[in-house]
Image (cartoon, rainbow, N blue to C red; front, side, top):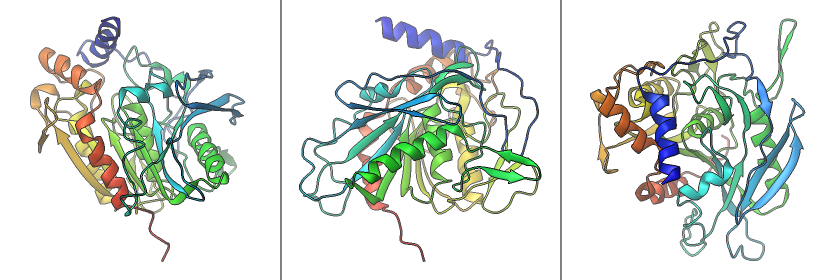
Length: 352
């Protein structure tokens, strides 16, 4: 009961029309969108039955951690697929237990051999930072998908200014590389999943990392522009024409986005805008919209918001906000096998 009440208060404040942003105003928009998020503190996750990995210090000298979940039987000399799961904002890496990704870990194959079951799950932990989300999610645990310097080469120099790599992307890079170094991971089958803010970061990461085979995420706001983000950008496959565009480095990414026709903050039309923008940049998007009973539909519910920018002052009605809250805070467990099968069908393609 306490968890339900807590989530209800949080999501209602997040989505109702009277919510305010209270985010820190950026100094200026740059070639990579907003400035880096202001860091409040590190977060050390409770991994439950998993293994805690870390600490590793990021460029801000903040200790970073991840949770590792391995299947019961890995088999001798067998490399396994790996899912990188990114948690929602305000919740930690251990929140993966609210999905059924781990429940299927020992029974589902992500390869073309149905007998080769099992996959590794890596759940990196975010940091407590400032966000461009409405109160109370304007600060807290999460991922910085507003500073979009995710060049796979790392730091970038433009003129006399060096633009540091997104610290969260660098942390995800580190933990993936550490698992690859063990020799237990199939490098052709590294996948990304995530929920809410973790889905937004997962999308941003996948379309910028050629080593990611595919992404399948749930209910993520558009990482290129949602709510009152003052530095929204359009993803493009080539060099940007100006600061309103941002180059992505893996337009060959195969992606699936499962989201609700009625979702928190009116983000369904925002997700449709994301799909349209990514399609224009050459990214293949399997856009799956669910109704309140997790049945597939093909349009958003107008009473739950119609503005594709998903402004902080939501256009959703009161009932739409309540329904959107309930939908957003529950993982679509009936669709997890579909996400896993999407991964199975899309290993990393060898370079031409």
